[in-house]
Length: 198
Image (cartoon, rainbow, N blue to C red):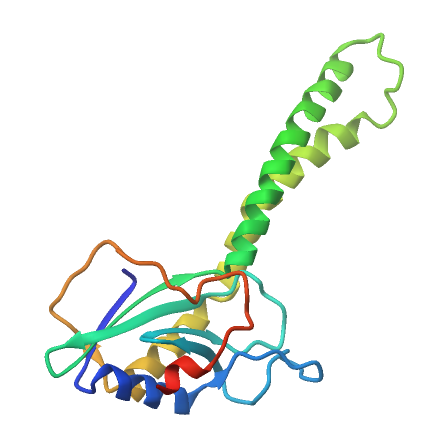
């Protein structure tokens, strides 16, 4: 678990206070950030779960998204959360890497064999077959890490919002492994917003 905090407010109050401080992440056609509203943090709620991410005015599909949940902890709330990228991005990168490896590896070895064989007919463009397949595979590993590095500072703003809004601090509970996955970590970004208002 990346974040474990305790608030003296009950979970429903925490969710309501958090909802006042963020804009719902609803797409907007005529917006520089691509989302409606103007608040720095965007998010979504469903039941006792939430997702938060920073409003960006530039594209970074690998930017951090905080998925969390609030459960009752004595008279207050236990806030558990983890950082992840959007599921659609993770699925796309797995497909990209799979295809790059599946197609690029045999192509690379065919070109390498032709490079070594002096009787190979087409020797002018062999460098393309030697550089492009490994470059595509390498890019598939480096691009996500570059995106995470560029969005690293965003995590601080989101954690500060949680701590400030919910008057939350560290807890004595230490959970090393996450035993749940957020229902808000889906391929669809257009889910109902009515659940948090209950």
